[in-house]
Image (cartoon, rainbow, N blue to C red; front, side):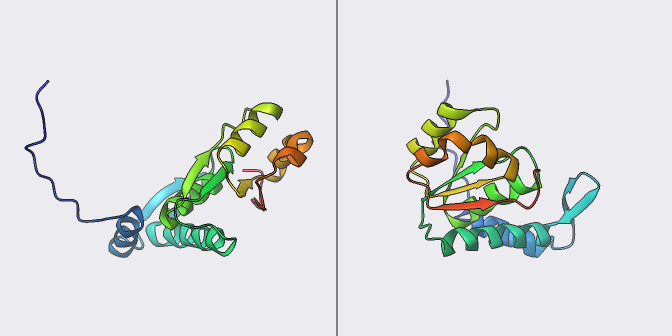
Length: 145
């Protein structure tokens, strides 16, 4: 296999946050994504993600802090995940089909102090909730996604 080490590429952005900020500014009112019957502009989605990043920070998350995300595929998932990326945190996405001991292991093993989930999935955590000893903050989405 031929080495590509000789190819020089220029990357104009040092961070995901810088990339997203530039894209949101350059394409502010252009549609970034459609979710169900609603279109979301670059600027609206960027603002929602920055709001999540600010919430994580206000709860004590530091650079590279893990944020546990237990949300089905949805707009809320994208905002939680991208918010973690834009804040410089580690998004630990958790399969929503897991139950009990599997969830307990992953949430405790990732060392997250913040868990983002839906009201319905919070109920799934029921029996193991007292065993999630590292979680200090629970963020519930408004909907069950």
